[in-house]
Image (tube, rainbow, N blue to C red; front, side, top):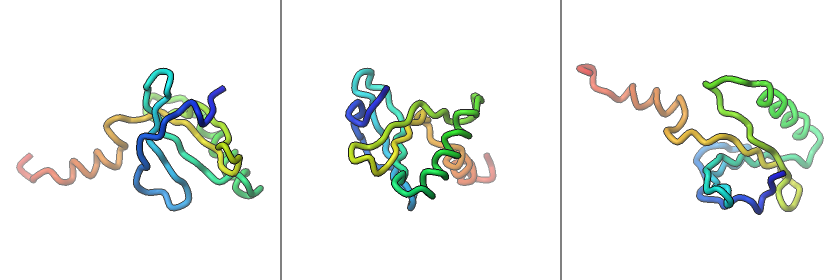
Length: 105
């Protein structure tokens, strides 16, 4: 089972008022992942996060980001969700990029 100490934080990613999202590297393999840190102290937060985790575990598509694992942060206030990292960004970035092309293209 993974833990927080197995990962090295590379940088904080933009966005996310409710959650902090980081680009991280698994120290043993140098493979990059996304670490989403979500509040997990209050019962209401736990219920929402548990539903999100359950849904992500059920998704099995080449077109969705997969949940790799979860574990508590060192202070056990938040839950760390490790997700696949899409090197070329997400679909929103791709759509924005295409919208900036001149009409001639």
